Length: 242
Ligand SMILES: [Zn+2]
Image 1: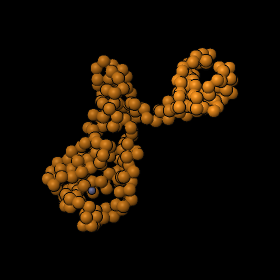
Image 2: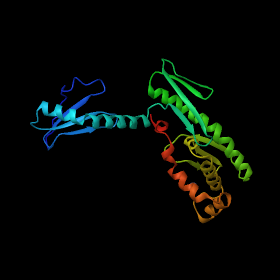
Image 3: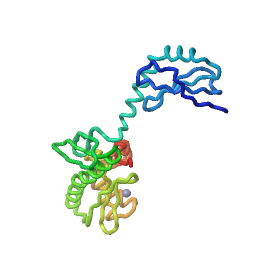
C-alpha cells in the first residue's frame, strides 16, 4: 500500500475554521470526508481525481462536515486540559475555575471560585491537583476518623494519595490510605469504602469473615461496591494528567 500525504491549499476561500487536509490515497475508491476529534477535517481522494471534483464534493457535503466538526469539537471540550469547574459528589460542592496565564504560579480560593495563575495549562493543572489533594484531605480524613470512632475500630494514621489504581488501602499498623478522587463520588459510596478499609484492619484479606463484617457494618454493600468499581468513570481526566 502506498499513501501520499499532501496538504493542498484547495480551499483557501473557507474561513479560519475550515482547515482541511487533503490526502491522496491509492487505496481509496471514492472521495470521503473524515472529521477527527478536535474538528480536524481530512478529505481522502483517490488517485487521479482532480481538484475541481474535490472542491465540488466538499461543497456538497459542507453542511454534514460543519455539523460533524461542531460535535467533534464539543467532544474535546469534555476532556479539557484545565477544567472550567469542579464538582464534588461527596459534598455536592461546585467550584468555578478561573485560570489565567501568568509568570508566577498561584491558586486562591475566593468564595468557591478557584483563581489559578500559571505559565501554562500543565502547571495550572499541577496547582489544581495540589488543591484537590488538600481539599480531599479536609473532606475525607475527619469523616473517616469519625466513622472509625463510631465503629470502635482504631486508626493510627490517614494518608491521602492521588493514584490511578486504587480507591483505598490499609496497613497492618492501622494506616488507612484514601484516594483523593473519592471526593467525586457520592457520600454513601465513600462511606462504604471507609467501612471496607476499616474492616481490613480486622481481616487483612477478602475472606468470608471479612465480608461478614462488612455486611454487618454496611448491609447494602453489594450495590455500593459495584458503584465504587464503576466510579472511576466519574473522575475527571485532568486529575491524572501530567
Ligand atoms: Zn479490600
